[in-house]
Image 1 (cartoon, rainbow, N blue to C red):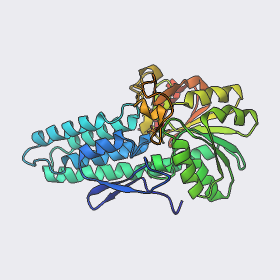
Image 2 (spheres, helix red, strand yellow; image 1 turned 180 degrees about the vertical axis):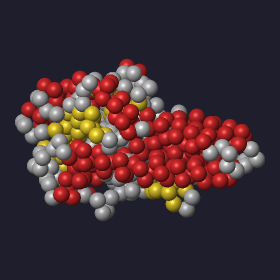
Image 3 (cartoon, rainbow, N blue to C red; image 1 turned 30 degrees about the horizontal axis):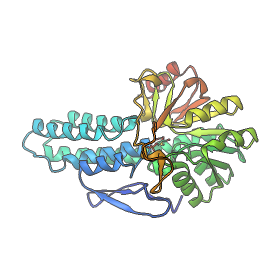
Amino acid sequence: MSDQLLTIEWKNNKLVLLDQTVLPNEIIYKEYDSAESVWEAIRTMVVRGAPAIGVTAAYGLYLGIKDAPESSFEDFRKTLKEKSELLATSRPTAVNLFWALERMENIAETNKGLPVAALKETLLKEAKAIHKEDEEINRKIGENLLSLLEDGMGILTHCNAGSLATTKYGTATAPIYLAKERGWNFKVYSDETRPRLQGSTLTALELQKAGIDVTIITDSMAGVVMSQNKIDAIIVGADRVAANGDVANKVGTLGVSILAKYYNIPFYVAVPTPTIDLKTKSGKDIPIEERDPEEVINLFGKWTALKDSKVYNPAFDITPAENITAIVTEKGIVRAPYRENLLKIFNDFY
Ligand code: MRU
């Protein structure tokens, strides 16, 4: 992964984000120094993917409080809450956003005895810790997933749960990068992923740059490749896993899971534990983002339907737990019954 594109960097007390909206045609890095500009970057998908959104929000919250008055903790807490609430409205589905903001707020509460200037430094350290942990987590997810795979397999993925959606390795792509380090060869199929094309513009880009064999297909071709025995395993990421094992991920994941069941192909979901939300009981309770209709009917500045067409554009769907062979985390491989076994992962490790 030597010439990996860096998604997020903390540089000269500013946040630097790779602008994912212009990939693969342009490589542009943008600098951010306020919570408001970070909010805009998440909302417009300059940065996207659940873990990357979480890391970005943590830095965004620090940027929001770095110039806050230092006279009292109570005044500081007011600014912290205000900026956290703002960042929380950037996107609704990926729980990592809320997880990271909550973790930052909790650190402030735990350290409220510190002078505010020192507390600000503590919050920056926490954001950096969240950033660093993400890389370690992904490597472990990759190792756990690799134990379920074999050299030479055909793997289908949907959307981008790759290094661009995280700090390094990605979640769904982590075993693919680790396999490459071992000298294994997978044949990867990447769904294009309408409407924002994360599969072709991001997943295929990063895998190709790493010298991995990747083939792009349109979303409607997933059934064909499965019927032709080209796929031995499906690996996707997640934006939120509910307590019962239902998974919210990029729209189209549900269809892939149904096809996988029909063709009897293992369907794995790769998730860092911060993506597991035990407070959300089932998929029905996960808020699904609906995005601008233009994403569906305006492609690269050209209308592909009448401008005033009726459009439905949910950005995510819910894959029911029963379609999932295993949820693979950094703490281990979780199988049904998910309600019991997801809880166990938390009880055993926290
Ligand atoms: O709308 P996006 O691009 O933020 O959606 C991203 C996904 O659905 C990913 O699969 C998910 O966040 C997991 S990223 C490791």
